[in-house]
Image 1 (spheres, helix red, strand yellow):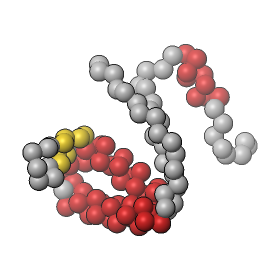
Image 2 (cartoon, one colour; image 1 turned 90 degrees about the vertical axis):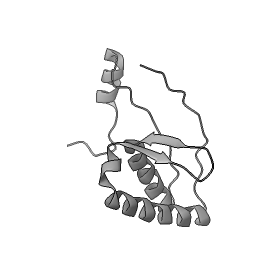
Image 3 (cartoon, helix red, strand yellow; image 1 turned 120 degrees about the vertical axis):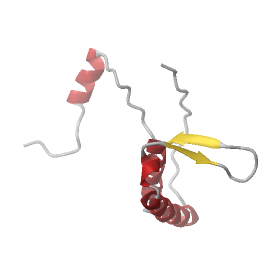
Length: 104
């Protein structure tokens, strides 16, 4: 399995222009996926008109919509990767992690 390189970015609260652009993009991408539902599970190819072509997994497009939806309401967004296999200490940390919900 290939390893991914994570790029660290500083969280920034989107300004009014970015909020508006994100809201427009969410509507456009959701409409696009409604017209092409098969792309949510297959690769999506972007060809902006020059010779550059970018292909991403359909699941990444759905995550992009989620990121844009958060930006559209003014939230800063960060991405955390979750590895499919956990060590015993990592699993214990997840079980013990606070949920933010009141305990019963």
